[in-house]
Image 1 (cartoon, helix red, strand yellow):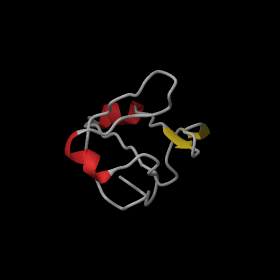
Image 2: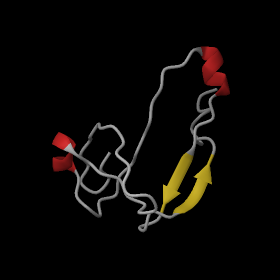
Image 3: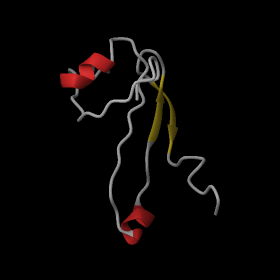
Length: 82
């Protein structure tokens, strides 16, 4: 999700140069993002109920230089409605 312009995009992860704290957007998705845009990266999986119980998602919040400023192990919404 491009938080800067509101456009959605789906792409595989393309890591940048080691230590660069960057990633690349190629193909059609490249028309939906520009250098400096704020991007939300999400990963999804399909799990059995047993596997899901062992799953521990990681949430990272980065600053404008892609430095990790917050690490979370679980979304505050994970137990919503329980």
